[in-house]
Length: 394
Image (cartoon, rainbow, N blue to C red):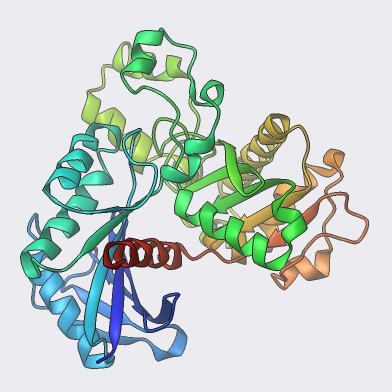
């Protein structure tokens, strides 16, 4: 009987699912699937490109996702021979200081993840809903958590510290960093493609609806743009990025806003959407002739370039700049907007290569290699889950 492993990458409104064959020593992807919780009825989309097959689900989204999970596994089995499922791997946004690598989930580790919910109030509950639903669906199925924060545990203590009273740092108010699974994949791809690059000073820009940057050296994280929360760093689709704390004092004080109102503004009404007043989707803004759309994109690229410069200071130089995720991989004008602001660093694009989203988009004269590398968080989740299963079997 064939053996497979299923991964779950839960976002705020979707769940990305990966199905992997584990017959060999490394998980090999069979297919991708997505459930979009914004659609009614729920639909399971299986496959990629023109090969996507959609199955409507009878289950309704709610706090208990057991029926959604049951229909999802049944839907996957209709399209693929998934055989025996050896594990379910999960992306969990926040591991705090407790988790520095993948762990097998049991009552104790699930409780520990739940205890970190105040550090990621929008994302952690989504992760926990899926974990608990799969426990109900298949109580004997091995589940493994991979943490977005774990890759950044190699950051120096001074990098992780805010300039606030030490007592708050000791209570966990520090810089954690996120998108770690994506950066771990990029580090692995660099090591495979150009080993000399991964040993050097690298800044990777994960630019999607959520966006952050990471400074890496020898394949390890040294600094990152996101800090205590997923709001920090550069502007995103609907999130504000770095914000003067005085703005919050003003909103709560003279502005008279409640906590829930401010949270909604910062997470859901800011970023590209807030500046443009048009859309959170950079593709829409790039096609628009409205000057507010242009301003939103210009602010986005300005802040990204500024963060590249800050991270270069942490590293003491820059050898390679990597663009990844949906925007980073597919939007030449955004890459150009960032790189034009970095010409003082010796960054120079090959316009033709950039326009076709080539793997290398820097010119031969550029002092910094500029690369486009598609990320694959689900592959990292699968490999980490498989490593835990193999360690248990050994």
